[in-house]
Structure formats: structure tokens, C-alpha cells
Amino acid sequence: MSVDSSQTAANRGARTRAARGAKKPHGQWKIDGTEPLNANEEFKLEDGGLNVRERIENVYAKGGFASIDPTDLHGRFRWWGLYTQRKPGIDGGKTATLEPHELEDEYFMLRVRIDGGQLTTEQLRVIGEISTDFARGTADLTDRQNIQLHWIEVESMPEIWRRLEAVGLGTTEACGDVPRVVLGSPVAGISVDELIDPTPQIDEITDRFIGDPELANLPRKFKTAITGHPSQDVVHEINDVSFVAIDHPEHGIGYDVWVGGALSTVPRLGERLGAWASPDQVSEVWHGVVRIFRDYGYRRLRNKARLKFLLADWGPEKFREVLETEYLGYALADGPAPTRPTGPGDHVGVHKQKDGRNYIGVTPIVGRISGDLLTKLADLLEDHGSARLRTTPHQKLVLLDVDEERTESLIAGLDELGLSARPSLIRRGTIACTGIEYCKLAIVETKETAKNAVLDLEKRFEQTDLPAPLSLHINGCPNSCARIQTADVGLKGQMITDDDGNKVPGFQVHLGGGLASSDRDEAGLGRTVRGLKVTADGIADYVERVAHRFAEQRDGDETFAQWAHRVDEEALI
Image 1 (cartoon, one colour):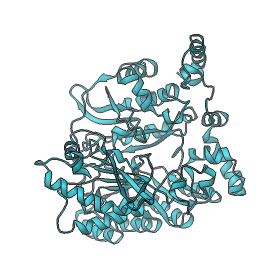
Image 2 (tube, rainbow, N blue to C red):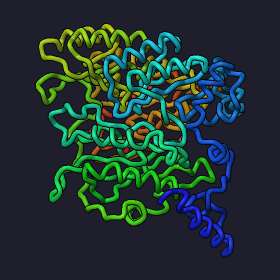
Image 3 (cartoon, helix red, strand yellow):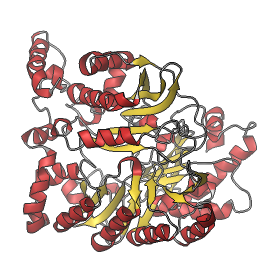
Image 4 (cartoon, rainbow, N blue to C red):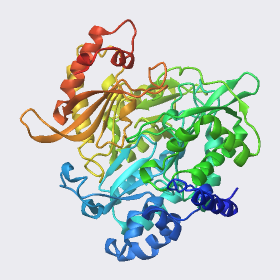
């Protein structure tokens, strides 16, 4: 049912609520009507976010930053991948006390949307050149398979879009209350182990629905993940909707459907609907789930507007019933749960492709790269006969189509670029968000802090390897862009008091989290120890201490997550 056709029923529902003295409305369009209940909903109703591109190109790019309408600047620009970045020099303690306009600089973060993480070397080179020409050489791999650039001026956007779109890239709905990038298995179509190549499903969703005005005003962001690989390599438990390949005993290869996962300050893992979707049904199911979110999602309060809150109230049984009866018009087949993942989902190292060639997963330190590196990587890959690569949900890169006899030469060249195919366990398992360097929400610095911790820990563990892989996720604020609740050691940025009574950058510690694609038996959130905090310069000391305790107290082949949830708090301090 379209928004327009449901409007009358929605308004009837609103009148019924009012007549019986119902609670304050949640802003659910199908129940409460579409009257906006906050400023965000007002600006979206007044003018859709997709419409701002014309003004960026024809007005703001010519008039400069000062010409930008404030509502466009702080709202609709996001629909095209643009956020103002943090003004340099503002202390993290002021993040919560200053207004957005006081925190922001006259430059933008630009998010390049890369659905499924699929790139050609030509596209990679264009991103690298844009970084060099317009972004002061900056570039970061995100854990959403995108690439982010910084120091972008609004005057540059028409040329940036021209270059991106000339090679099939873009920034449409890279941010905003819209369907964000579709995470896809980084080894889609190439791995000898995959059950199914999800690329056709990813392409159908993005071709049909991204940029569709009917889906461009959601209550909040909407995240999607699809994988056909048995490592379950797309962090499916923390997306709004996910499709995980399974072999159904009656229907064959298809997808198990999950909904309602997200982290941030109120983390909640997604739940199975118990439904099996055939490859041909995936886009219809996706479309149904996103419309449920549009029509029934909570819009009154921004901090309650994610799909996870609706699922928490409805439960998976009602969600599936509404999906099938109101949006699909048919019942989905029941299906079994996915089996336990077969191995790590980051694909680091050298692996065989279906065609006998190799793919190589490489690790930059915490996703920090540069425009120069991207152009050099494109050259290096082409020199070794490859023209394809993938980004991953783990801030890594997977390089495709490498002949066996060229593999070691390529690995040597990658090492010179700072991209390791054989990284230490601590480098491999560390990710970090953007942090205070550019983000207006951040309280502490993350990228350099994480890099320093990795390099320090590599020296400390030089003689004795870690007893098992260890994931270290570092986030600059409580919003968990770096997935702190699902790491072995997750660090949430905040100002803390040091031993001398001074307020300094530091982190609250989360321990023993993990997703199914890690080495846990099942996904789970980390535990916190009351009062356990570390300073920014004390991360290496803490990780070394807790890793040694794990090694000493480990029971057999127990994972860090199992150990961290088993032991007394004293062992974790």
C-alpha cells in the first residue's frame, strides 16, 4: 500500500486514538497520520532530501558555504552523502555543550556509496584523484564498505559528482533517513565456498529503489546486508534487514531473513523471522520491510526511531504477519537457521577463487588510507593483471583475480603501501571510527589513538603471539559506529578522570562481544565492568594485561568472549 492510499486509514486511526484518550502518538504514518511531530519530520515533509542536489549544483556551489540554507545544510545535504565536519581545535568536553553550528567547519565529509563493496581499479583511481584534488588527500575505509573523504568544499561538488558518475559511482542516499549502502559479501561471485552469489539481489535492490522518492523519507536510517558466503561476512545481526544464505531442505539455496538489528546507545541484535526467501523474492521482501519501517516506524522521537524499537514492541511473529499480509500478499516459506559460520568473515590473507586464481584480503591500520595510496594501489593491481577489488565491513580491502605466480610480488608491493596480507592478530582485529578529528559527535580522538595502540601492542606481542584472535574496536562517542558492543575489547570514548584528578580523553570498556562471523558460538553483546575505564594513552597497557590473563586462565580452546563472560570482574580490571 502506498503512503497516499494509506493516508485516509491513518487519519481514521489517529481520530480513533484521540477519541479513546490514547497515549501520545509515536508518529506512525499508518496509525497517527503524517502530521510532522518534530523539526526533522517538518523539513522532510516540506521538501524531500533528494531535491537538494539541484540547489547544491546551481546555487550553493556558485555562492559558497555562506549561501547555504540552514535546513539544507543540517538536513537535506545528508541525502547526498554530505555532513559538515568538525571545526579543528574544539575540545571533546565541549561536544555536548555547543550547538551544531558552533562545532561545524565550512568543509564537508563526503561519503562515496559502494554497494556490495564492489569496485574496479578505474573507480578506485577516480576516488583517489578526487581525494588528492579536493580532499587534501584524505580517505577512510568505513565498516559499511564505503569510502569517506574530508575537507570537501561545496564549490567542488558538481565536478566531484561528474567524475564519480562517469565511472558508475555516486553519493545518492549515502546518508540521511533513507536506505543506506547495501552491505554485500566481499567475495561475492568469486569464492569457492559461497552458497550463492548475492550480486543480482544487491543490484536489483539498488537499481529499483535507491533514489526512489517513495522511500526517501524514513523515520531514520535503514541498513541492509546480504551474503551468500558461509562465513556470514556482513555483520547481519546489526542491520535493519539482512539476508543470509542457507540451503533449505525442500526449496534449495535461498536466504534466511533477519530484521531489527542496530547498535548505538541502545544496542539490539536482529532477530530471525523464521522465513526463507528465494533469490527472486529478496527484493520484494526488502521492499516490504522498508515500507513497514516507513509506515509504522516511530517518528516522534529521533532516539526511538530505528526499526529495532518497532521490532521490540511487535516481536518477529507479528512483524512477519504484517509483512506477508499487508505488503507481500503471500506467505513466505518457513526456513531453518543458518549454520555456524565456517571461519572469519574479514577474508584477510590469500584464498582461492572459483577460477583458480587468488583473492587477497589486506589490512590497512584502522581503515586510514589516502588518495595517493588509492591511486598507487590501482596501478599496482593493474600491473599484476587485476582490475577488481572489494571493500569490506571490517575496514579492509579484498583484491581479486591474482594469478598464483604474481601473488607474492603483489603482496610485497602491498606491504610497501602499508597494506598487509599477513597482519598481526591485533592489527587485523582493530577498527576505529572517524573520531574527534572530523566528527561533530565525537568526544575523543580515535584513528591516531588506535594506530598508536596497534603499533605498541605489535612490539609487546612480538615474541609471543596472542593466544587467539583479538578484536579491538575504538569509538569516539557512545554511538558505536565502530561496533564497540560486538568486539572482544570495545572502547567507548568519553572524558574521564585520571589518577591525578584531571579530565582527560579516555574510554569505557566493553568486553566479550561478538557476532556470528567472529569466533563466538553465537552473537552477543559485550559486558561492562562498573568503573572500568582506560585513558587514551593507556590502551596498550590494558589490552596487554587482559590478554595475558586470558592466556593464563583460558580453558582449553575457549574464546576471549567466552572467557570474558565467565570470569569474575577482578580478572577484567
